[in-house]
Image (cartoon, rainbow, N blue to C red; front, side, top):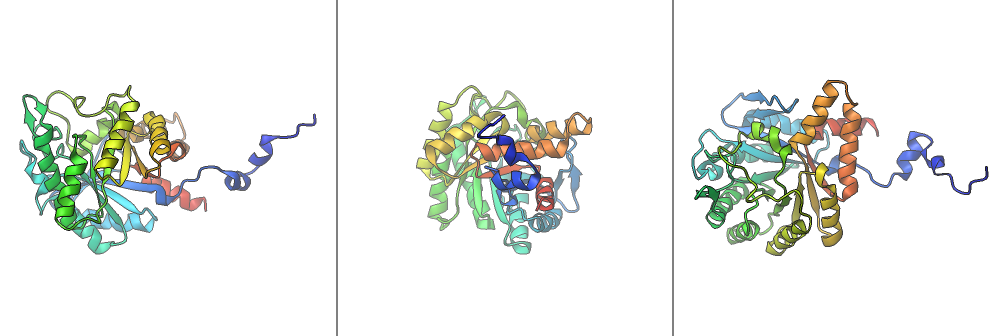
Length: 325
């Protein structure tokens, strides 16, 4: 049979497949989330997230060196404080775990980019993302707390701050306080399209941030909405966001593509804890090849339009990418 074009010709062998590959994944695309806790000598494994732990600052310093040695360019820090209260006051404690971790990482591995999660849920006794009034989060009252938290991170040496709370107007409030205090060069990575997702379950164990009542659907997005995501992103860009994020990643690949196509802005995607733990659990049972499922998932996120991927697979993926060179 004389076929003018045979697509399989370009699939014969790994080298040729690699040469014609349309989308490539590199270590430069990866950001590793880390959970920083108080105290010293703490390395508390997270049961639902194999290979991950709550780490005290002394362990974070060691972890940072390994991360950088793997070629991973950035980490994002989440804090587990010693003290929680109704207003999450530990979030802007200059001696808090995140603030101390920023200083330690920048001292030991200054070339490693440090991003900080800006939210109240890890710090409030009720587990919600702001001040509670009438059994709901008070949007405008929460903005002041988020701004103070972001400023404390910048003052500690953070390279990027990343508000994840989904309060209206928080990007503008944070941009104002950073600019007013001389941090005009600190970018904001906004969790612009953050959905109320079931895939956050393991994270809530890791960050000890499970809501003590109700849920977060009054401020996180409804999974059925796509146009709303574009409105959220447009608002955050107008308010001063430098990078916009979609969270979770895998169930929302269409959202990543729409945002990248519409705005041509740097887009981050969060390959969240539930996505990580599902693959880990299935691989442990022998139901799938864990490494291949990991790399296929990350490639799909990159292919959808993400410029950077926050993922708990970062170290494992980096090691595989190094082997493939």
